[in-house]
Amino acid sequence: MEYQNPLINNGHEKNRISLFVDGENAYYAQRSLGWFFDPLKLLNFFTQGCSVGDAFWYASQKMPPDPREKRFFDYLNHAGYTVRAKSIKYFRDETSDELTRKANLDLELAIDLFTTIAQYDTAIIVSGDGDFERAVELLRSYGKRVVVAATQDTIARELRNAVGKHFFDLATIRNHIERFTAQPIDASERGEILAID
Image (cartoon, rainbow, N blue to C red; front, top):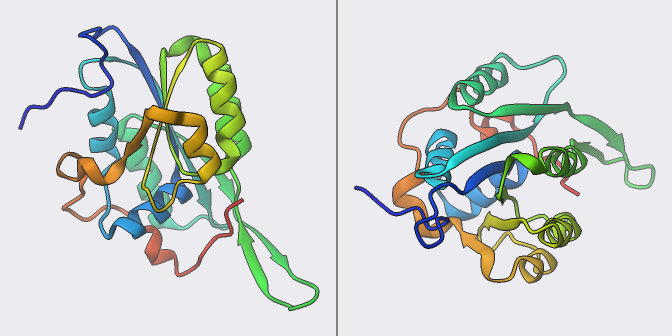
């Protein structure tokens, strides 16, 4: 089914779009939706009819690397993404002796937003993380359009407020981005939950 890219304003197809996907945050958004999206379909949906600047996917990585993760990263590369992966770090709480796993790529995403600023007119951030509130405000002050794609349940209030009318609910585009076939790895197969800042 043919559709009109909602990010094209008044037929301006020359709009350059870059996509920045916070992989861990996107995983939790998909869990809240009850279905998973295909990264290639997601990229195609947001860039159809426009010029693609860059596409980045930020992901945690086990050490030593899991072969399934490598297949997933290869899939992302094939789909057109640059993958930024960071090793999972483990922290033990001294009081409770509880082990926490953490792989925060917020800084990497923010750096890419600003170092590639000349490559896009519109930045699409697939994340509901409130830590991106200031980045959204700064990008808008530079004349960039910033769209945040997340779910109503997973977007932080401060980020929702910063993005205003440029919030895009992933639930509304299920027919265009849902994954129906197996993917090289599902985050649920990791058997662990990461702490997300």
